[in-house]
Length: 311
Image (cartoon, rainbow, N blue to C red; front, side, top):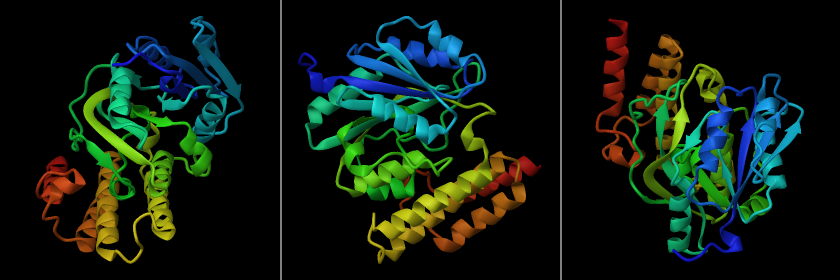
């Protein structure tokens, strides 16, 4: 790999709100990167716990802290983008971490792909609140290839903690939407891809996502509202042609399938069944389930799981 140029430097943004128990691990995972050409910006979004003390104890000159009144995750990421000094921006949630080779692998792909690609993301593994590994999720996105606006309309991948983008795309596409309290990353990736910026996905799990009771994704009704809003916006904007009704029916079907799972995981079992049925009514059969990153007969599998949980 050639020696890093100025264009290979990256500003890493960690938005932090009351995650003092997890933040040291996130910071340490950035400082442990084998790719050393970065700055780390911790945006303290008005935390009321020990987050300021955690930041104050970090004396590495590559790390700086920006504190602001609490304004939400999107606003914190937008602050990080404004503060960024380098040509690339990466995001890492304060409760997640990177494997040591994350940035090296991402910039290896940027070098291989050339300037036509604006973003590189990776697959993720999972851990629990204590940092112990969890089994892989139902959807293992372990393939490698290009993602398009259509890809993001079907599924939210890569996750925000596993993506690096050229900073210039934000000048063209605008900031994260502060009105969204979830799915704000998916909304951004759809907007970026719809403007012709190319995404590459590396199916190597190099980011580790922490699952714990305080995750924003634990609020199933809010997740349903925001993910539905993002899809409606994408339809209105023509991210995929509005007349392409089969695509949008499939997208809506997958949306309700995922909504069924989030409600089931939240203990809202009756609604989970209702949304699973809605998914089937919208698009009864997925002949090539792998194209939506699911196993064959995935909704029958979900129904069997729901029934087994009742027994």
